[in-house]
Image 1 (cartoon, rainbow, N blue to C red):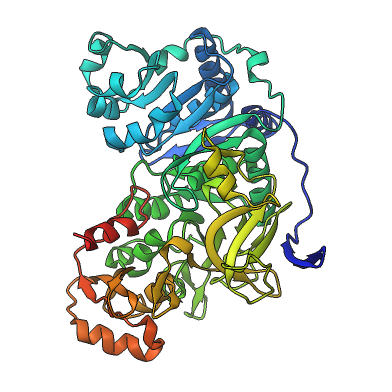
Image 2 (image 1 turned 90 degrees about the vertical axis):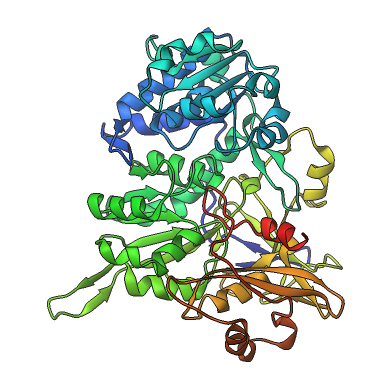
Length: 556
């Protein structure tokens, strides 16, 4: 809702404020599990599972294991694993043992690891066997401060027994932790202040290069409570939830994993995403809610594989990470979660909802209420306040005026690790986080994201949002996927260029795309940078399109 403070316009949450206590995140999660019945809370794609009591026991044993290794309060523990049950209790075990987690994409190259995780000088590394084998030659150089590797088996191989003699590093099998009594050092677990760091996670920041985002225990607690109030508590029936998003990603870590088990739902998860794995899980386990990113939504909307599976149990798709094109929303609702009533009429049961957030906001800052439009990114969560400022003057803008989105609240990061300049430039003098996103609020408090500031294209002096063009192009009957970037132009500064993946067995020409698109847009938004047909678009392991890779490719 819009409010005036000192004659300036701000936007506040409609939700009641929540109390954020000073507590260790792991203690909070474990206490919530102890208050509920003992049941299965996690299940992977191979149907391996763990119940809440065994999970609590495993977390405490990991904490004790690190205590026995001599962990000091505040030591950083690096994590390089895919989605695994062992990963989940290692994360909370590290925090309960007094450490700080720092995790990145487990498929990163040695150079990428050096540019990110090595900057925080982890004292221990938790890694699965497959990744250990892949980077073992570089480990000692990458982590000179590392005292031991904690190894998780994820394959059957007799060589595992001989690992300790293959490296100059001390290698400890996670199974060894499971043999202790689980009585951890509670003084190390105690959180003394609201500013005590729980995680160092990596983000490209709101403006560019990767930085370590410092998230505190209270940041996590605020985010979990905010999401539960706005999302999980709205369901009257127990949900079967699937997370297709890697848990090293902030959205997968907090919104999917931590919120799900805190609320008492069972979380099904996929180690490495594929559409076939997702569809198999939905059909076999009768999944009701799926957390996805837009590229996965596009797969569900457009792939012919979907027609081979029964997805009628799915009632909600919740998307984050980027704006969800309205054209994809409509296609999804035609294909997924449709049942037939007694009169042989199709009933559309599927709700498509969105959230908005970033690593710096502990995942989610806004969530899409059930009764509002799917094209909206939602409304502010509890305890949050926002403003939209003019790009040039910095003046606070009113409803329906497009500007730079800024947010403030208990889930906002402490700052960037050992990077005061970056921290100072990301917060304004009122303490608001400058998100780097372009958008506007409507009168009812809903936020609409237009694009990223750094992705905006300046054509003929006008700002062009790639997301707008992508949304329109996805409505073309032959287009499967698309990514729009700006390329240098002597005539108009920058010109939009579209990289297009066509649907299987479809053919199209550039002129066909131009003729279809141009009547729908202003002249300065035309694809004067060209149309490039490609077999695929570069994507991260989380399935997010890597726009920057196409920008680099365009300069070659």
